[in-house]
Image 1 (cartoon, one colour):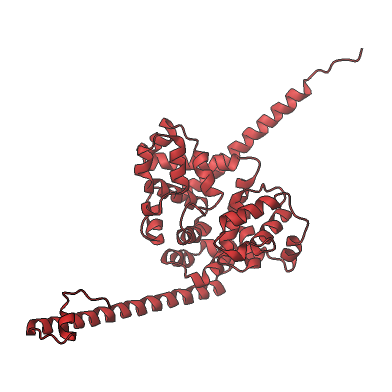
Image 2: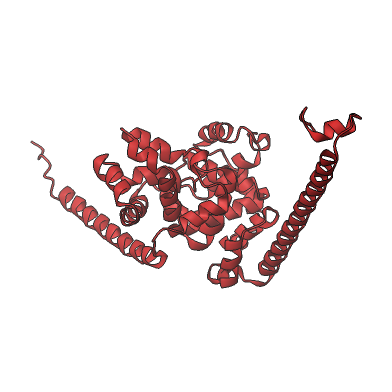
Length: 361
């Protein structure tokens, strides 16, 4: 322990006679130190006990709750709110996504050994760029490249983008390779796959829902971003929704976002987007360009965020967002977009059939 030159403990330990006041001070300081140390030890033990209890509760739920019912189970939702221990997190994600129902023995190893997909070079580049601090993910034959290779072989209509690498890589930071693959497949199938389609309709629908939520929660920021700067809501949402906030938020914050997203679905993405906007609020209102605002939103400074992942999630849930209404509006808007696409397709067919070709002489 480093001591100040004027510390009473220096006088006592160096043999210089001190007053009874100094001696008493050392004694009381030592007692206070012991008391604080004892208190910290008790707090640490209590924290460890709480952690073990949460682990036990989760393991009990994982073995008793059918995966197909997990997103409707109130006990699951309550435990998600209390927190997910890192030791069981990937098991919880597997439960929430019902990943085991997707898994077929031997399929993953076969898919990952197929002919390299067209995006293979882009995948390699992104793996090295996005996960440079994780050497085990770097290899051409490593788990991340193999997972992406297998997925794009299985679902060739998905357009590759860096977001796939970020989501898959973050999954593999917690889950074993094959388990991670089926969790990834389930997440894509349940919510994310339309974001990686050549058709941007789903992103436009969800971005429109986000802009409505922004306007009803913060009219001033909404006006600055959507009206004054004329930013397309999809330009804000695309970097978030196609990465599940990997790269935008610190890793432990992303984990908590995923915990709740896998239960709540797309409304959780909208809430987290609102939370990021709130954290960047001052910078946004002072910003002079669209590029500056989009930069802040894509990578907000960690110093702007609440001090812990749980505090950040509390902020996300503080906004006035009716999750059920969002789900209903989303279905309605999806139908409208499909109907518009069908009408436009019919017009194209009608116009093409009306073309008159020149006759042969």
